[in-house]
Image: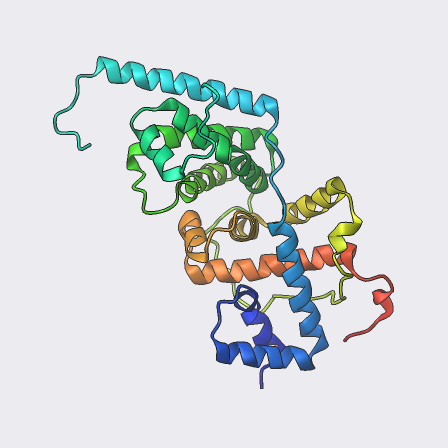
Length: 93
Length: 206
């Protein structure tokens, strides 16, 4: 018989559906008999779902504009360096 | 960088173009992932200023080392790895934060404490405004220790696989799994305070 502790240790893989059918059957039979573990499994599943459903907030415009400026500078510097340096014949392409 | 009309272009094609020096293609890659990288950086560093530094450093490094990206993983996974490294470095530099060691060993299982067991209502998140929900979710994540937080953010928010998370954080797969379980259980417990079905306080399951 599976204990609650056994169930908890398999909970993540159970919710991620990363377990074989035999273990899944054992875990499922445990939660039909153990209301505590059923609640934990159900609320943990909901926790993960809520976080997964979180869309990233749009990036603040000032943060984005500073990022783009920094990148433009970097790109210009790289281009400059490429123009000044003669092509290295040993460089793999 | 010019506003691109590359919105529908396949990621691997953009990477090839960017590697050939097409800055517009790289700009499109930045636009696709800047929001997620900024969010990830904020979650890991818990500090907006640090997160902005991490965001810039991540794309600068990606641009600089684009020729090292082999294309055997997704571009996104590659930049996430860069971002996580940058973010963890920021955390380590913050002297006051003594809890940051990704290598810290933790025993598994024994203290996976479950104190609060109460069923939630149906779609409890629908009862709250977007802002309220966002505030609750963010503060719950903030209260996790950095080593749990990083694993949870990568696995369950950024949706990396266990193996990708392990690689990004320099952890073993079993370490990722045990930290993920704890993070999930701790968050579940924190959210239960907001989402439990009304009247369930008195309902003793134990």
